[in-house]
Image (cartoon, rainbow, N blue to C red):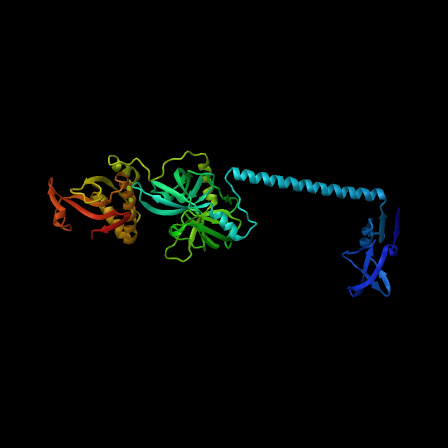
Amino acid sequence: RSMYVMIVVLLGLITSVAYAGSWSGYPTVNVRVNGKPYQGDVPAILVESRTFLPVRGIGEAVGADVTWDQATQTVSIAMMDAKALLGRAESAEAQVAKLQAELKKTQDELQKANERSKQTGGGTPSNTGSRQELIAQLKTRVFRLDVFDGAGTKTSSGSAVAVGMAELVTNYHVIADASKVIATDDQGHSYDITGQLASSEELDVAVLRVNGQLTPVELRTQDAPTVGEDILAIGSPEGLTNTVSTGIVSGTRDWKGITILQLSAPVSHGSSGGGLFDVQGRLVGITFASLVDGQNLNFAIPMKNVVPIIETARTATPKPLPGVSNVTPANVEATIAARYPTFKVAGKSVSAKYSLVRRSAPQGQQAPYFLSIDLDNTQYRSFLEGLLTDFNTGKADVEAYMINVGKIFQQAYPGKSSDVDIFHIGMYSSYPSSYTANEVSYRNGGWQVIHLSVRTSNESGVWRSSWNE
């Protein structure tokens, strides 16, 4: 039944009252309802020796429905019978059971997702332990790469990260000239690289197939780390396997049409291809460059640019490493001409003609031939114009081009020292007095010039250029 009152004091339900402080300037009292402390938002107060109780709080504490009618200024208290109270209890139990069922369903889905992630190469490191534990786990999934040329000589080292059960991701430039690569983990276990699965020379990313079973890292693909976010880098600078450095994402930069991450975490030579991780241990980028003259100016390629190459690799058939080729003395000229029909000198395009020249008396480990890059009058003029436009830039362009050509030439003669020369070979109607006498000869009614401009040589794996002033 319902009872309507203007002011209700349920003294019969109160087993004890004691003073307990103040509220809006009035003393408050502690109230116990059915033996339990009343802890409503509005307390009971004492006004001129009379105790005033909050109707809604006390009513609901004993299972009543309390409403307020603004029009009639009336409080309505509806006492529930036993059946209604039992229904409310059963409804609460049903809600608890429903929530428990939803919780179990969520836990089951998370467990299944983790199992699928492990099967598809998305191993998840534990992030509930200490940072030391996380780093120790990640270090088992980052590798040092030792790179060898066709003669079996170690030429460089780099780093790589496990992104599949038998796949490593690294920078393309790390393996660009590799005939053989060996991956070594944190425990000293070595694995042969059996080929490359997918790569982008433009983005400097390559995915390699490993002869062994790996534990992959988790990839962070939904978003990129933000500026100021804590990160850690793991790589093998100077061959020091799995060195860890920490820092933050200090900025973003545009590079070849993509946005790359700038890092404060130190990244030294040999760390190219290493892993950049967030504090949960997820791979967020591949480290690939640092500024030699800048302190802690290091960079990484975000995973959103790396993941498409990884996905391509998952269904690809391995192909030989870039340094493993079919270049022979018989086809080396055609191979180089197809790859480098022109070259740039401070933005000036120069066409090139290639020829093998036999050495009269090869010395020691010299290849029996050297490679001549022949420039006629027109091309030599373009060559000189480029150098006059910006000598330092043009000089750097020429030397880089000659080294790239020399590396292809060297594949035809593995294990031999190589020379690549730029010659001006031209004809003049009058005597070209700007050249030395031994560079000029009279032939077929004109004056022929054969002038050596630049020589780039490789000895013991080191390329050096010398210019004929």
